[in-house]
Every structure is written in structure tokens, then in C-alpha cells.
Length: 347
Image (cartoon, rainbow, N blue to C red):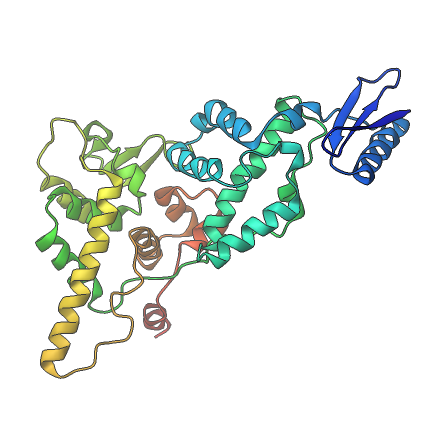
């Protein structure tokens, strides 16, 4: 039977003692909450489904996040970004709360608050997925079997929208002209051109070494790719020409640049190219084309490169061997064929 007694400061202390189960104690602010908890625990004991929540009640979200960062995050490829997301959670209002006290309503409120603050659904989803995985790890591996995962009870934001941005007429030439003219790092324009030729990811290219390149066979081997597999990609004549023009760096890297630096360079080049285009239109008395050089990101070049593989005549399996996509569904997500090119094939 449960023993409920009033303590000082209007608190109610519950103690449940039953043979074959560990003693359960908890303190509540109201007598009604104490009765509800006692009935729940005793009911679970009667049905043989009781699992102690003591560990989850003693562990705060902040403590769990710190342990997760020590034990789980280092095993992931995106550990740097995940650490940044963990830091965000450590500053949240939920951080001091115990894991057992966090409910789906708390996370739904977090989701809605983030949306009002202008955060994208993709960002909110990634933050919630970290928390969801933490709860699963705590339940399966940290001895908190009775801990429910509140993320499973809310409507999760959808992932990022499928992008289909490709270069339109005149955009590619103006973009690379601006990149060549304004980029201080001479390796970055070559990296970007090489990305368009190979459909390789930014993270793969910045780790590529000369010893991984075989010019005679016209191949480059990508180690430690995003999906954890090694693949060898064919190099076009243009890709080989790009490599031939590169000076060798003492580091042994083909492109001795940082990934973030490449992203910033692309953003700056697009902005400068757009400004120059608009100025030329103003002088000529013409109206700028709608959306010209707008909405392009570095990762869109992978979409561009993948789509060009099909336009060159490669089939699905051949294209996947180049890009490293493990499923045809993901390959389709990165492929956006131009209707004008398809019309030419139709005759």
C-alpha cells in the first residue's frame, strides 16, 4: 500500500513498499498529484509491467546531454554540428528538468516557439531528432527502461524541401567569372568546377589527396564518404584538365581549403555576380530576369552535376556509382532534368 503524508511547505511525500519491488518514493506539490502517481505505480505493479523510473527522475536533461556528447556524438560523422545543437539544448529551459518530467507537450511547445522565431522546419527537426535519439539511448542502454520517448508523441516537422535549382542560361558563366575575379584562394574556383564535373560532396573534395588520384586510369578514390563507404569515381577530360592546372600543396591535399571557406566564397561570388548583372541591366535600360542567380547554394552544384550525368547518357546504376547514392530514391531526389534538353531528344 502507498503511504502519503504531508511535509512542510505544502508538499506531499509518497512511499510505496511492496514485496518483490524496490521501494518507490516521490514528492508532489498537491495531494491529488500524489494520489494519481501512487495509483499508477501500484497498478503497474499489479499488472507486472512496472519498471523503475528512479534513474530517469534523478537525471536532468543537461546531465544526459553531456553524457550523450561524450559517448554517442563522437561516433557520428557530423559530430561537430551535433555538438552545436547539443549546446543549444543545454541553454534551453528544459535543460534543468529531469528526463522523466519532460512530456510531449513540452516538445510541442518548443517546436511551435521555434517556428515563431523563424527557424526552418529542417533545423527544428534535426534538433528534435537528437533529443529523440538521446531518449532511446537512455531507455535501451542507460538503465532507464521505463522512460518513454516524448518525441514519438508529437508531430515532427518535415525535413527540408526537395530542391531543384540548377543553372539557367547565362548564370554559370557569370558565377564562375565572379568567383575567379573575387576569390582570394586560388584553389576554391578549381574545387567548385571539379565538384560540378564529379558530383562529389564538399566534404569529400576537401579531404581528397593526390595519392587518391590516378590520372592514367582517370579515377579518384573517395575514402570515408558520407555513407561510410569507399568509392572510385571516373574523371572526365575536363576534370583531368582542372587537376593538371593545380599546383601541388605541401599538405598533399588536392584542394587544401576548408569546407566552410568554400561555401562562403560561393555565396559571395553569387552576390557579386547578381549585383553586376543588375547594374548592367540598369545601364542598358532592361529589366533583370526574375530570379537570376538567386536561390543557388553550394550543395545545389551536386544536383547540377548529378543531373548532367543523365543528360550525358548514363543510366541509373552508372550515375549512382559516380555520385555514391545508395538508393535510387535519393538519386532521383538529386536529379532534375531540364525540359529543354528532353525536348531535344524527343525531336
